[in-house]
Image (tube, rainbow, N blue to C red):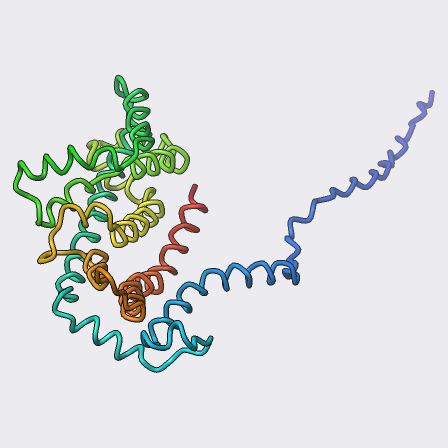
Length: 302
């Protein structure tokens, strides 16, 4: 009896179907050069911004006899002489006024940045009773005109004996409601709460958390606030003109003394205005790139 042996037939694997190709969206950003409309608009804005400086230089480089008679669009050659007359004028004490403006503007700008950043950090990231109504009350003070508080503020400075001193200009401007609102809004958007919680878990105190976490995040907005506050304090004329005297003025107050009662030499006045503008232009030139880089860095991190 024979047993039939069956040989197993080999199983051939069916070829797999090719996997479908995935299509990825191209993330390349196509760069397009701005057209004539963009350059034209920027040119108009540039001319509108430069024209007041050119007009001031045009008047300041002439003399009083030629301003009304034969004024042309070509600057004269008397600007250096007019600037020297303004600087050497004993009635305005130019260098003392310049140093006073530097002291007042720098002090108020630094104090506004520090105090506004602290207050903004507290309103944005700390939880305490009455924070919402208190922030609303701070913002509401921006709706009150400055002129309404001049009389009681002057009486208060007179009682303290600060009239005629720089403290009467510096102390009321140590912090502003706009600075608190600015820093509060920026820190709410750019500073994640998780970073603060991680720092507190690691054992950082409240001050160390602010110093190592909050302050680096607030640096771009603080730079812009410093610049805005410095320029505003530098150009402030109303309150220093009221509370300071002619022996201890700021630069805008001192330049106003160039105007006599019945005669105004506009060539000297505008030459002095350009001299007062030069420090601000230098400030923008030396800090503009750092401000833009800080803003871009904060935007990327946020």
